Image (tube, rainbow, N blue to C red; front, side, top):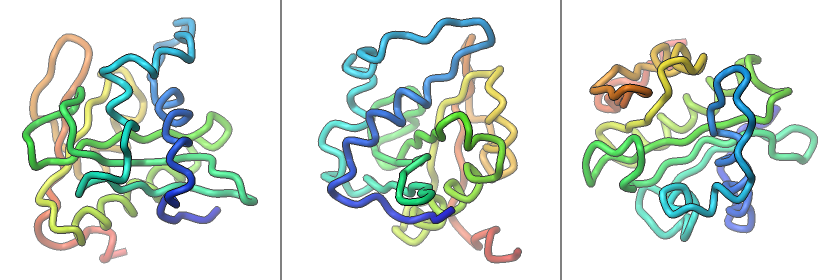
Length: 164
């Protein structure tokens, strides 16, 4: 497995990974693929690469991108302010729970830290198993609503992955 930054000619992959990122509780039928065209979801990929926080790390196996984590400053579900990037992350199902999400997340946090960002945010549904990953990567709950937590990770100071 190789972890690298998204190339300019691969930005359309974000649509696929956005759909994969939709958390479905057990027994919930998947929404139609067209859901990613809704304005509140399209902001995750439209014009990607044009913003200062538009960054993406992908996981690639045998020439195929199988996962992505990306950031943007956007008024999304994880929005906390106009200077904090929000994250989205997903892997195709066969690649989940193998540590690849952690590797992508660590790469992204390092990239944002090096870019001078002080913190990063995300939204996660309360019963999403990925909550444990986010907490172990340094995310803490900032606020919550009925269904999800808004979490932030402080990027100031030392990179915890440097201590490994």
